[in-house]
Amino acid sequence: MWPHFRHVTDEQLLSAAQRWPSVMRMWERQMRIEGGNTVPGPVLSFCLFGEGQINDGNFDKAGMFAEMWSDVDGRAGARRDTFRARYFDPLIACIKAAGELLPEWRVRIYVESQMGFVKRELSGFPNVDLVWMAEASIGSTGGFWRLLAATDPTVPRFVACEADDVLSPALALPIRAWEASGGLPVMRYFYREPPALWPIYVPIHAGRWGAVGGVFPRIEWQAAAFLTFQGELNAERSTHQLGFHVPGHYCFDEQFLAQVVYAPACKLGMYNDFTFASAATDAPGDPSTMDLEYQCSAS
Image (cartoon, one colour):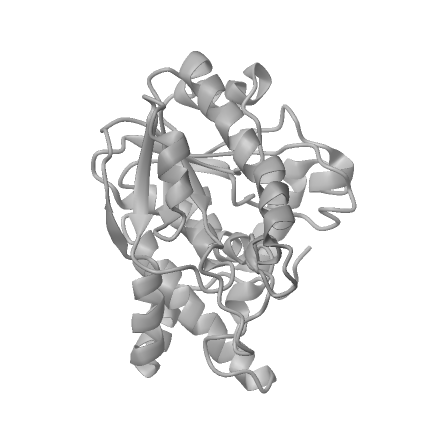
């Protein structure tokens, strides 16, 4: 359980954005799209970032690919190989599987503009749409980019995905089941992983949930305001400069989902797929029971 995760309202987010307008503008720029070609339709939403990782003392070094792209010790080549093995090769496998298992779904990838090799290697796939972001990710802020599909009016529904998850017939089942669930606007599924990775209950995994288009029309603004809100909190607790400490925090987009998205999702109606859930991983007991306890702590 994350006892410090309490629901953050839009009123609280607006108040933080108004108190720190320059910080808010910085995070809004992080969510800005520079260009790209997209095709209307349901979307499997991914993000790739890290080529422009900034490490100057103000930013944590826990960005998604920071350790793989930095050349401070002359080992950039080896780290690029590590990146390819962990993220890029599984992503290519997922693209190919999506074409077979979910042929009407598009694979949309939000990418840092510095990562030109992505265009060279992925533009040949007919089911891939590349969206280029205006700025390099600050810390792990790029993890939020896959949520931007929620604000696209041409996307009837989206599922946020992990770049290192290989889509298989089994993993396609939650998506098909959600489509057949009778119109529930939000979906999440739990996936069995080593308990050491998830010793606490995570109500929505960042890369294992989705929503119908239009359900979260302000998620772009909410994400920027949440980064501002949390930066203010952390500035009060540490010597870090306002707005620069939090984004490097691992799984920070998951914290956003837990504090901002989860409560509205419960009210809207959420399809829960526990096919792959592990009691030892997702909760020390029945996940639905843990949901009730979490809702009480989040209220």
